[in-house]
Amino acid sequence: MRTNFFHFILFNFCTICSISLSAQDYFPLAIGKKWTYGNARPSTPNMTMFIGRSKVEWEGKTYFQMKTLTLEDSTGQDQVPSVLLRKGKKGNLYGINLSVSEDEFLFFPGKPEAGYNWTGLSGLSRITSTRGNLQTPVGNFENCVIVESIAGGAKAYTYYQEDIGMVGMKLEDRLLMYLIKE
Image (cartoon, rainbow, N blue to C red; front, side, top):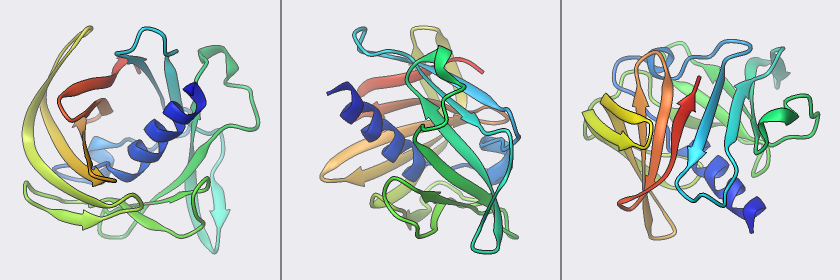
C-alpha cells in the first residue's frame, strides 16, 4: 500500500507541476538540489526528491535526473523511481517519467499565467492562481503558483514557490504532503 501511495505521489508530482514567471524560477534544476517532504498521514514516511549527481543523455537531449526516495537515509540507492527533466528554449520544462513511458511530455510551461491549461502525462492541468497560500504543519507558504490537475476524476492541487519548487500538494481539500526541508 505504501509503495502504491508513493508511486501515486511521484506520478502526480511529475505530471501536475507549473509556475508563474519561468520554469527555472519555480522548479530549480541543479545537480544535488534536494527537497524533503512530510506527509499528512503520520503512518507514511517522509519522501526525499533530489536531482542526481550527473546529467543524462536521452535521444540526443540532455536531462537532469530527479530521483525519489521514501527513506531519507537511502540516497545512495541505485534503483529509485526517477524522472528526466530538461528546460526547453522557451523556458518550458519537459519530462520523461521512466516508470510510465519513454515519451517526453510538458512538465510545466515556462511562462504560464492563471487560466493556462495543458495536457501532461496524467491528464489535464490548469494554473488556478499565481498568488496562492498554503498552510502546513511547518508554516505558511505565500505567493505560490497553484496547479489543479484532474486525473481519474480526482482533483489534485500542487503549490510552488519561487526559487524553492514544490512546497505542497493537496488531494481535493486534504493536505497530502508539504516541504519540511530543502
